[in-house]
Image (cartoon, rainbow, N blue to C red; front, side, top):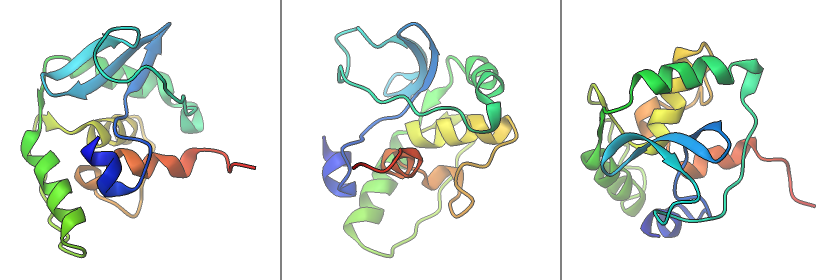
Length: 136
């Protein structure tokens, strides 16, 4: 994946776990509910526990966004920002989300700021690696 290559991270997508193998996520076709067993996307995933017990509140907000649009332009902004180091473009449209922004915003709406050093629109999948336990 291009995102994995540019961010030097094995993570190219993030979503909010709903139940079983279902997620709510921002994808190219918009904010959708998806079964992780579908043919779309990868088939291995890592679950990161919800901070401060606010997962249900974040999930409720995510559900309320079903049908919103994906932000294709933000995807390009992230790419340019990584290609031209230090460019620091800030772009944040209303009602459109990239996947990282969507998850960060869901938790912000639930009262948890996941990335105090970043604007939600600047969050990318690689940023979530900081919540993983260290590898031995």
